[in-house]
Amino acid sequence: MIISGEPGISTGRPLLSKTYLRSEEDFESWHVKPADWYAAHVDELLAETALTATDATAHSVALGPGRELEYQKLLIATGGRNRRPQIPGG
Image (cartoon, rainbow, N blue to C red; front, side):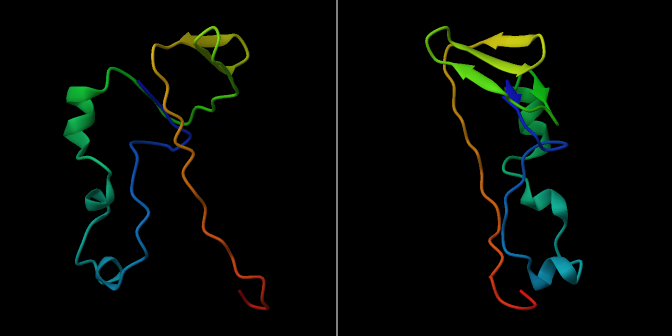
């Protein structure tokens, strides 16, 4: 199962390239895995879902009011955000 705040399957975060801007590559090539891989390997994708709490002792995660899931193994991959330079016009 994948729980993600993103609206669909995960994508990489490469630098915005000139080839993409010139339409020489498409957005699909930025997926971490091809779209059909997810259908074959992931039982459920909970997109646009926030994980609000974890309980390592109980092996459970909370996804919001009243929704809790148990797990055997948990990987938390928080990703990253671009940093904006603290300069005028940055």
